[in-house]
Length: 177
Length: 154
Image 1 (tube, rainbow over the protein chains, first blue to last red):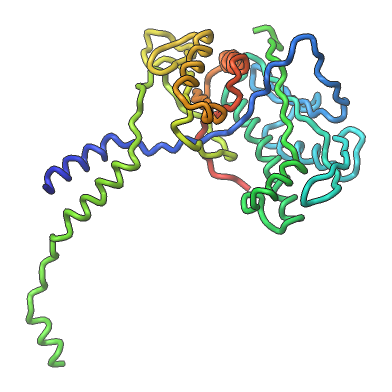
Image 2: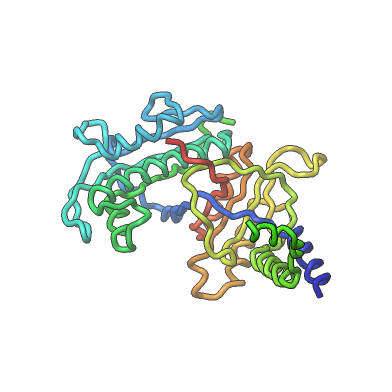
Protein backbone atom coordinates (compact mmCIF):
# COMPACT_ATOMS: atom_id res chain seq x y z
CA UNK A 1 0.00 0.00 0.00
CA UNK A 2 2.63 2.48 1.06
CA UNK A 3 4.73 1.41 -1.93
CA UNK A 4 1.97 2.24 -4.36
CA UNK A 5 1.42 5.56 -2.62
CA UNK A 6 5.12 6.30 -2.87
CA UNK A 7 5.16 5.40 -6.53
CA UNK A 8 2.24 7.69 -7.28
CA UNK A 9 3.73 10.40 -5.13
CA UNK A 10 6.98 10.34 -7.04
CA UNK A 11 5.12 10.32 -10.35
CA UNK A 12 3.18 13.45 -9.44
CA UNK A 13 6.26 15.07 -7.96
CA UNK A 14 8.04 14.67 -11.26
CA UNK A 15 5.19 15.67 -13.56
CA UNK A 16 4.00 18.64 -11.57
CA UNK A 17 4.75 22.08 -12.93
CA UNK A 18 4.23 24.83 -10.45
CA UNK A 19 4.12 27.67 -12.94
CA UNK A 20 1.50 30.20 -12.02
CA UNK A 21 0.34 31.94 -15.13
CA UNK A 22 0.46 35.65 -14.63
CA UNK A 23 0.68 38.60 -16.91
CA UNK A 24 -0.51 42.05 -17.84
CA UNK A 25 -4.18 41.94 -18.73
CA UNK A 26 -5.34 44.19 -21.55
CA UNK A 27 -8.46 44.68 -23.62
CA UNK A 28 -8.00 45.07 -27.35
CA UNK A 29 -10.20 47.67 -28.98
CA UNK A 30 -12.79 46.43 -31.47
CA UNK A 31 -11.84 47.14 -35.08
CA UNK A 32 -12.93 50.61 -36.17
CA UNK A 33 -16.15 50.65 -38.20
CA UNK A 34 -15.41 51.48 -41.84
CA UNK A 35 -16.00 55.03 -42.96
CA UNK A 36 -16.19 56.46 -39.45
CA UNK A 37 -13.42 58.76 -38.35
CA UNK A 38 -12.22 58.42 -34.78
CA UNK A 39 -13.52 61.18 -32.52
CA UNK A 40 -11.16 64.15 -32.47
CA UNK A 41 -9.12 64.58 -29.30
CA UNK A 42 -7.42 67.81 -28.38
CA UNK A 43 -3.66 67.83 -28.74
CA UNK A 44 -3.10 68.60 -25.07
CA UNK A 45 -5.13 65.60 -23.98
CA UNK A 46 -2.87 63.10 -25.70
CA UNK A 47 0.36 61.78 -24.21
CA UNK A 48 2.26 60.50 -27.19
CA UNK A 49 4.59 57.61 -26.50
CA UNK A 50 6.65 56.27 -29.38
CA UNK A 51 9.11 53.39 -29.39
CA UNK A 52 11.41 52.96 -32.36
CA UNK A 53 13.09 49.86 -33.72
CA UNK A 54 16.19 50.53 -31.61
CA UNK A 55 14.03 50.36 -28.47
CA UNK A 56 14.35 54.08 -27.83
CA UNK A 57 11.54 56.04 -26.31
CA UNK A 58 10.06 59.33 -27.42
CA UNK A 59 7.53 60.97 -25.10
CA UNK A 60 5.76 64.09 -26.38
CA UNK A 61 8.48 64.60 -28.95
CA UNK A 62 11.35 64.37 -26.51
CA UNK A 63 13.63 61.40 -25.88
CA UNK A 64 13.00 59.82 -22.49
CA UNK A 65 14.03 56.84 -20.41
CA UNK A 66 11.65 54.08 -19.34
CA UNK A 67 12.31 54.97 -15.71
CA UNK A 68 10.97 58.52 -16.27
CA UNK A 69 7.78 57.37 -17.93
CA UNK A 70 5.93 56.65 -14.70
CA UNK A 71 6.38 60.14 -13.28
CA UNK A 72 5.58 61.74 -16.62
CA UNK A 73 2.36 59.77 -16.93
CA UNK A 74 1.31 60.66 -13.41
CA UNK A 75 2.04 64.34 -13.97
CA UNK A 76 0.12 64.20 -17.24
CA UNK A 77 -3.02 62.80 -15.63
CA UNK A 78 -2.89 64.75 -12.37
CA UNK A 79 -1.96 68.14 -13.79
CA UNK A 80 -2.30 69.91 -10.42
CA UNK A 81 -1.36 73.37 -11.73
CA UNK A 82 -3.65 73.13 -14.79
CA UNK A 83 -0.73 73.36 -17.16
CA UNK A 84 -1.81 74.13 -20.74
CA UNK A 85 0.25 71.26 -22.17
CA UNK A 86 -1.09 68.58 -19.84
CA UNK A 87 -4.47 66.89 -19.79
CA UNK A 88 -7.74 68.72 -19.28
CA UNK A 89 -10.21 67.79 -16.58
CA UNK A 90 -13.94 67.50 -16.81
CA UNK A 91 -16.26 67.41 -13.84
CA UNK A 92 -18.16 64.16 -13.88
CA UNK A 93 -20.71 62.63 -11.56
CA UNK A 94 -19.28 59.44 -10.12
CA UNK A 95 -21.39 57.27 -7.80
CA UNK A 96 -20.24 57.33 -4.15
CA UNK A 97 -18.00 60.31 -4.83
CA UNK A 98 -20.29 62.91 -6.35
CA UNK A 99 -19.03 65.60 -8.68
CA UNK A 100 -15.29 65.31 -9.15
CA UNK A 101 -12.88 66.37 -11.89
CA UNK A 102 -11.85 63.48 -14.12
CA UNK A 103 -8.89 63.71 -16.45
CA UNK A 104 -9.68 63.59 -20.16
CA UNK A 105 -6.16 62.43 -20.96
CA UNK A 106 -5.41 59.56 -23.31
CA UNK A 107 -2.09 57.81 -23.71
CA UNK A 108 -1.28 57.09 -27.31
CA UNK A 109 1.21 54.26 -27.64
CA UNK A 110 2.86 53.61 -30.95
CA UNK A 111 5.60 51.16 -31.70
CA UNK A 112 7.63 50.08 -34.67
CA UNK A 113 7.52 46.58 -36.10
CA UNK A 114 11.16 46.23 -35.11
CA UNK A 115 10.60 47.07 -31.45
CA UNK A 116 11.47 44.21 -29.13
CA UNK A 117 8.68 42.65 -27.10
CA UNK A 118 10.67 43.15 -23.91
CA UNK A 119 10.71 46.92 -24.41
CA UNK A 120 7.02 46.97 -25.28
CA UNK A 121 6.11 45.08 -22.12
CA UNK A 122 8.25 47.30 -19.92
CA UNK A 123 6.54 50.39 -21.34
CA UNK A 124 3.10 48.83 -20.86
CA UNK A 125 4.17 47.92 -17.36
CA UNK A 126 5.27 51.45 -16.51
CA UNK A 127 1.99 52.88 -17.81
CA UNK A 128 0.01 50.35 -15.80
CA UNK A 129 2.12 51.11 -12.74
CA UNK A 130 1.47 54.83 -13.11
CA UNK A 131 -2.29 54.36 -13.29
CA UNK A 132 -2.13 51.90 -10.42
CA UNK A 133 -0.29 54.39 -8.23
CA UNK A 134 -2.75 57.13 -9.13
CA UNK A 135 -5.64 54.86 -8.18
CA UNK A 136 -3.92 53.93 -4.93
CA UNK A 137 -3.42 57.59 -4.01
CA UNK A 138 -6.98 58.44 -4.98
CA UNK A 139 -8.42 55.54 -2.99
CA UNK A 140 -6.37 56.50 0.05
CA UNK A 141 -7.55 60.08 -0.14
CA UNK A 142 -11.24 59.28 -0.51
CA UNK A 143 -11.71 55.93 1.22
CA UNK A 144 -8.61 55.70 3.41
CA UNK A 145 -7.68 52.35 1.91
CA UNK A 146 -5.52 51.03 -0.87
CA UNK A 147 -7.16 50.33 -4.20
CA UNK A 148 -6.85 46.56 -3.80
CA UNK A 149 -8.61 46.65 -0.43
CA UNK A 150 -11.72 48.46 -1.66
CA UNK A 151 -15.02 46.70 -2.12
CA UNK A 152 -16.52 46.24 -5.55
CA UNK A 153 -18.57 49.45 -5.68
CA UNK A 154 -15.73 51.56 -4.39
CA UNK A 155 -13.22 50.12 -6.81
CA UNK A 156 -15.68 50.71 -9.64
CA UNK A 157 -15.98 54.35 -8.59
CA UNK A 158 -12.22 54.77 -8.41
CA UNK A 159 -11.83 53.16 -11.82
CA UNK A 160 -14.29 55.68 -13.19
CA UNK A 161 -12.58 58.61 -11.50
CA UNK A 162 -9.10 57.52 -12.60
CA UNK A 163 -9.59 55.89 -15.98
CA UNK A 164 -6.85 53.92 -17.69
CA UNK A 165 -7.00 55.16 -21.24
CA UNK A 166 -4.29 53.62 -23.36
CA UNK A 167 -4.84 53.77 -27.07
CA UNK A 168 -2.63 51.84 -29.40
CA UNK A 169 -2.23 53.22 -32.85
CA UNK A 170 -2.95 51.16 -35.91
CA UNK A 171 0.35 49.49 -36.76
CA UNK A 172 2.62 51.03 -39.32
CA UNK A 173 6.25 51.05 -40.23
CA UNK A 174 7.76 54.12 -38.70
CA UNK A 175 11.22 53.56 -40.05
CA UNK A 176 10.49 51.35 -42.96
CA UNK A 177 11.92 48.04 -41.80
CA UNK B 1 18.24 14.74 41.29
CA UNK B 2 16.83 11.31 41.53
CA UNK B 3 14.37 12.11 38.80
CA UNK B 4 17.07 12.88 36.27
CA UNK B 5 18.96 9.70 37.00
CA UNK B 6 15.80 7.74 36.45
CA UNK B 7 15.15 9.28 33.07
CA UNK B 8 18.62 8.89 31.64
CA UNK B 9 18.51 5.24 32.43
CA UNK B 10 15.70 4.64 29.93
CA UNK B 11 16.16 4.15 26.17
CA UNK B 12 14.66 6.82 23.96
CA UNK B 13 11.62 5.35 22.27
CA UNK B 14 11.81 5.02 18.46
CA UNK B 15 9.68 7.29 16.28
CA UNK B 16 6.39 5.67 15.51
CA UNK B 17 5.96 5.02 11.79
CA UNK B 18 2.27 4.32 12.07
CA UNK B 19 1.41 7.75 10.67
CA UNK B 20 3.84 7.53 7.77
CA UNK B 21 1.27 6.31 5.20
CA UNK B 22 -1.02 9.13 6.26
CA UNK B 23 1.69 11.68 5.61
CA UNK B 24 2.55 10.11 2.28
CA UNK B 25 -1.09 10.09 1.24
CA UNK B 26 -1.42 13.70 2.25
CA UNK B 27 1.54 14.66 0.07
CA UNK B 28 0.19 12.49 -2.71
CA UNK B 29 -3.18 14.21 -2.69
CA UNK B 30 -1.54 17.60 -2.52
CA UNK B 31 0.47 16.95 -5.65
CA UNK B 32 -2.45 15.28 -7.40
CA UNK B 33 -4.59 18.36 -6.87
CA UNK B 34 -2.00 20.99 -7.71
CA UNK B 35 -0.51 19.29 -10.72
CA UNK B 36 -1.40 20.64 -14.13
CA UNK B 37 -0.38 18.56 -17.07
CA UNK B 38 0.99 20.54 -19.95
CA UNK B 39 -1.23 19.69 -22.89
CA UNK B 40 1.14 20.73 -25.61
CA UNK B 41 4.87 20.39 -25.84
CA UNK B 42 6.58 23.62 -26.64
CA UNK B 43 8.15 23.83 -30.07
CA UNK B 44 9.35 27.35 -29.50
CA UNK B 45 11.69 28.75 -26.91
CA UNK B 46 10.06 31.20 -24.58
CA UNK B 47 11.67 33.26 -21.88
CA UNK B 48 9.01 35.74 -20.84
CA UNK B 49 9.85 39.33 -19.96
CA UNK B 50 9.49 40.62 -16.43
CA UNK B 51 6.88 43.02 -15.15
CA UNK B 52 5.66 44.27 -11.81
CA UNK B 53 2.00 45.02 -12.50
CA UNK B 54 0.92 41.45 -13.08
CA UNK B 55 -2.42 39.86 -12.51
CA UNK B 56 -3.01 36.18 -12.05
CA UNK B 57 -4.79 34.37 -14.82
CA UNK B 58 -8.06 33.15 -13.46
CA UNK B 59 -10.05 30.17 -14.65
CA UNK B 60 -7.42 28.20 -16.49
CA UNK B 61 -10.04 26.33 -18.49
CA UNK B 62 -11.12 29.55 -20.19
CA UNK B 63 -7.65 30.47 -21.33
CA UNK B 64 -6.19 29.63 -24.71
CA UNK B 65 -2.51 30.06 -25.33
CA UNK B 66 -0.64 31.45 -28.29
CA UNK B 67 3.10 30.90 -28.16
CA UNK B 68 5.50 33.04 -30.13
CA UNK B 69 9.24 32.59 -30.08
CA UNK B 70 12.27 31.23 -31.93
CA UNK B 71 11.99 27.50 -32.75
CA UNK B 72 13.64 25.01 -30.39
CA UNK B 73 15.02 23.21 -33.41
CA UNK B 74 17.92 25.34 -34.66
CA UNK B 75 17.46 23.98 -38.18
CA UNK B 76 14.22 25.92 -38.51
CA UNK B 77 16.00 29.25 -38.13
CA UNK B 78 16.01 31.86 -35.42
CA UNK B 79 13.07 33.96 -36.59
CA UNK B 80 10.12 33.94 -34.20
CA UNK B 81 7.30 31.60 -35.10
CA UNK B 82 3.76 31.14 -33.87
CA UNK B 83 2.72 27.93 -32.17
CA UNK B 84 -0.93 27.01 -31.74
CA UNK B 85 -1.77 23.82 -29.84
CA UNK B 86 1.15 21.59 -30.76
CA UNK B 87 2.20 22.72 -34.20
CA UNK B 88 3.59 25.74 -35.95
CA UNK B 89 1.04 28.03 -37.49
CA UNK B 90 0.64 31.14 -39.56
CA UNK B 91 -1.10 34.35 -38.56
CA UNK B 92 -4.04 33.40 -40.77
CA UNK B 93 -4.62 30.21 -38.72
CA UNK B 94 -5.48 32.18 -35.59
CA UNK B 95 -9.07 32.91 -36.63
CA UNK B 96 -9.80 29.19 -36.95
CA UNK B 97 -8.02 28.47 -33.67
CA UNK B 98 -10.14 31.00 -31.79
CA UNK B 99 -13.32 29.71 -33.45
CA UNK B 100 -12.50 26.18 -32.33
CA UNK B 101 -11.72 27.42 -28.84
CA UNK B 102 -15.10 29.18 -28.73
CA UNK B 103 -16.98 26.15 -29.99
CA UNK B 104 -15.50 24.08 -27.17
CA UNK B 105 -17.08 26.24 -24.48
CA UNK B 106 -20.59 26.98 -23.27
CA UNK B 107 -22.49 30.01 -24.45
CA UNK B 108 -22.21 31.81 -21.11
CA UNK B 109 -18.47 31.15 -20.81
CA UNK B 110 -17.60 32.56 -24.22
CA UNK B 111 -17.52 36.16 -23.08
CA UNK B 112 -14.84 35.31 -20.53
CA UNK B 113 -12.49 33.54 -22.89
CA UNK B 114 -9.02 34.98 -22.53
CA UNK B 115 -6.11 34.63 -24.90
CA UNK B 116 -2.78 34.43 -23.17
CA UNK B 117 0.13 35.53 -25.34
CA UNK B 118 3.28 33.73 -24.30
CA UNK B 119 5.95 35.57 -26.16
CA UNK B 120 9.71 35.43 -26.01
CA UNK B 121 11.23 38.72 -24.88
CA UNK B 122 13.49 39.08 -27.91
CA UNK B 123 10.63 38.74 -30.38
CA UNK B 124 10.07 41.71 -32.65
CA UNK B 125 6.76 43.52 -32.30
CA UNK B 126 5.90 43.04 -35.99
CA UNK B 127 4.64 39.50 -35.56
CA UNK B 128 2.97 40.39 -32.25
CA UNK B 129 1.11 43.25 -33.90
CA UNK B 130 -0.06 40.93 -36.69
CA UNK B 131 -1.40 38.49 -34.11
CA UNK B 132 -3.14 41.27 -32.19
CA UNK B 133 -4.77 42.57 -35.38
CA UNK B 134 -5.99 39.07 -36.15
CA UNK B 135 -7.42 38.70 -32.64
CA UNK B 136 -9.21 42.02 -33.00
CA UNK B 137 -10.70 40.87 -36.27
CA UNK B 138 -12.18 37.72 -34.76
CA UNK B 139 -13.34 39.52 -31.65
CA UNK B 140 -11.09 37.93 -29.03
CA UNK B 141 -10.51 41.16 -27.15
CA UNK B 142 -9.43 39.86 -23.76
CA UNK B 143 -5.74 39.23 -23.86
CA UNK B 144 -2.99 38.74 -21.35
CA UNK B 145 0.67 39.37 -21.99
CA UNK B 146 2.34 36.55 -20.10
CA UNK B 147 5.17 37.83 -17.91
CA UNK B 148 7.18 36.81 -14.91
CA UNK B 149 6.55 38.67 -11.72
CA UNK B 150 9.42 40.92 -10.76
CA UNK B 151 9.86 42.53 -7.38
CA UNK B 152 8.31 45.97 -7.21
CA UNK B 153 10.98 48.58 -6.76
CA UNK B 154 10.18 51.72 -4.87
